[in-house]
Length: 362
Ligand code: FNR
Image (cartoon, rainbow, N blue to C red):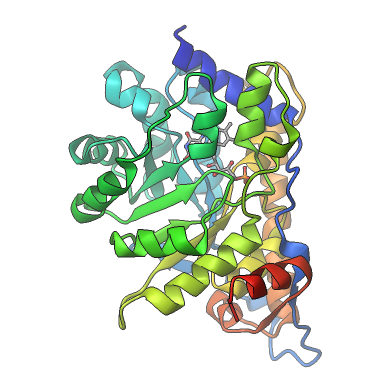
């Protein structure tokens, strides 16, 4: 096995072994407002949302995790089945490996084969030229293309990138040529107000804030090297803060008549966090560590997915609880549909409020 394939397995092992954080996702500072007189029939609440010409049964994305070695094909198969069964979107992990070596395509392609009608997203790094990105999209007949921004992870990785100057130009190129929605995502350190503005200027209209508070890639990379650097591991913008800043940038910076889609991800713990994110202005909620830990078991040093029905049930249980909490949140805020919730006020308090005040965000 080459070093890149080894790294993919290390990422999964470390993600299972580590707890979320140390940063908090910030959603305890967000309050939805109770409606004691809801004009709602709980049983007919509609969680479905449109996405790119298709319809999702609820606004949830199983975010990019893996691919690139036959050892993870089974993980992607099970994640894709989970997505298909629940009518939610799913993304493959970085396709760099398959763009280098076509023999590795099956480990990604399985996500489309198992989920032929669903929303499946391709995933590349910001060094990928436009024609290669198109190849990644075609490989999956993808409904969208994610480009991940991960400078903190690269710097924590002994073998990581060190020069990020060309990322901006490359993203502008991808935004011009990508035939499907281009989603720029962070992987756990968040998108700031300024970064969101720059992405909008580059023509990006889909932003996944990928904030701090969940899977911590700096810690994952440091543990692979037997290191622990608490200050570095605490780096990043909590998801709720990043979401508020990105929503602000979109409201202030988008030309009239244009629309943007914001995805809230990074340490989303449950449907209550999800509902808060939607009320703050997100269109979708992304989760990665939670379904992975369900499928493979948190804390396991070695993992096995073959015939792991228990893992399937645990991941399904997480999604069932997410859906139920989301429904409860809608009912108790007097909402029948997701877009009602997106138009409900919510209170931003505590540290989150303080940080937004310091940034001049009303
Ligand atoms: C990831 N993530 C990720 N993101 C990406 O864009 N490309 C990738 O290849 C990977 N690989 C990957 C591996 C593993 C094991 C995990 C757990 C995650 C990041 C992921 O999509 C997401 O942005 C972060 O994990 C934050 O979300 P959670 O995990 O806090 O819900």
